[in-house]
Length: 59
Image (cartoon, rainbow, N blue to C red; front, side, top):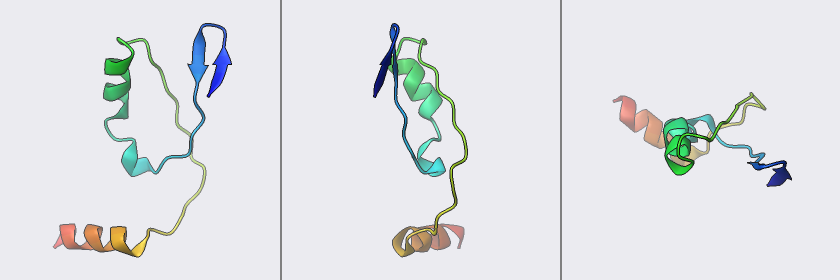
């Protein structure tokens, strides 16, 4: 976490699937004042256990 004038900046790498609903949660936690940006970093292979859950969900 980086401190800037009157704000906190958090730099993190998060799977895209974990970001769904984040904007709503952030607004709730910050009384509507929070803001975030996302940018693509890289692709990565899905772990086998997660891939299996995705496959089962599509059946």
